[in-house]
Length: 349
Length: 277
Image (cartoon, rainbow over the protein chains, first blue to last red):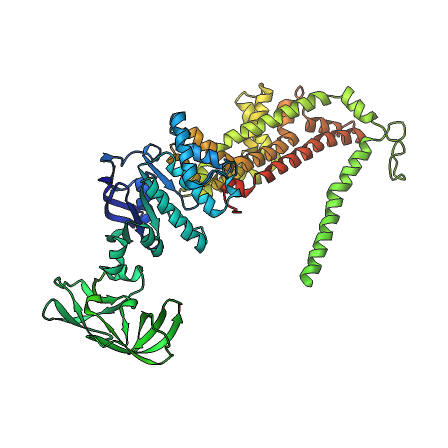
């Protein structure tokens, strides 16, 4: 069941159009990430949903009620801020109880809600401390506790891990996912970190210049990017401009690229927008003789333990290959193949 | 090496200047206030030949010192609070909103500070007299002081409002906070240092102000500076002036140290929430 509907949002700051006809439906208990580069409008979407920014046009429905003109204090949403925004002169306990008190939740109920939140977030030892006495991870947990203790319909995360170090980021990310799942929360999570979005979300919404570029499950976003932008922003891709497409039998087509002729499987009809072909570096099969066999010279080798990253030059075009094979040498010529079904046709945008 | 020597020279110079400008006048004032009238302090003596509290007792019993103390310490805190209240709307707009011409407006607010003090005082008192407000002596002086010292309060409070974290305000709103709660958790903690600084500056300015208090207050309303200036007038008695100077300065120094301590306790980590363990 859809809990949030965002319809045809437009937002501009002066001459800069931040959102262009942005629409979104989110189901109850779903975890959706808004992923995109800085300035693509993802935080604006979050602030419009929470009510801190009014759209120029468009509507926001929460549980089928139009809340477009409802101020943030009257919306049933809760935000986890990038800087946590904990009240520094209040203890952890007072920070978490703040929303319960302001929303005038009856004492008995608020006691139960508070205790449940504390238990799930393992904060019982920190209740008397002030925010500046806590580590970054603990502050994040307090912020999460403060947001979820009142049981909002939707919880909004604005780049909540960006102030944490790499190790803590992984731990807190898993904790956010666990808490979201335990409390059956609907979550919208803004990030520019693709690994965060892919690992935590039920669906990823990829944004570019105020528009949705692609929205899908993390696996599909990675395996089937539809555009040059999604293929290059999520993960690593080798992308080649193609021309002279020739239809072959059984939905195969052959195209000319800067690394040679490539044969690929494509069921749909090609349009004017379909001008790129891409493949993930791990799809290359080094040493294999297939339809799309390419030869290149190794320019760099980066051993990563479980796999090796190679940079290979084909006619001065550099491509990336990830393989589990070892024993490569710089300037060694290698042969590799890519299965036609692993070559993807992309749109221009 | 050169930087180290320069640092040392500057440090020693600072100590020497500090001693000449602060310590010597202070010691001289203390010594002069203790000169016994029976044995005058002549130029051939390093310290007064006889020291007593006669001048202190005399000033306390036979001058308007009691009234002056009461008036000054009624006036200064009242002016501090009223100026702070007057400054808040303008400082809020300067600190929280962006608008065309904001920097010019901020500069215009500070303009009275570069106007010569006596010109400003005479202009203000003339305005107050022309409005017929001079008969309310205390209220008229409070109003004039509040207007005179408003630029200091506006400037300090503007910086205070700029320090309020928008995320704290948003977090409070997001948790359904009322307007009062929003101010309690987001604004007041961040504004605390600015409150103290504004009160301190205006308090000192008001307690030391002479011209307005003299023109509007004379002859019935006496403050410590007006008493001091009258002591320095026709019947100039240096030891009496020294007693008044110390009475004027010492509480200010104590207050300044007290507020400085309060400002230190309002540390950035407590205001912003940053400063992780």
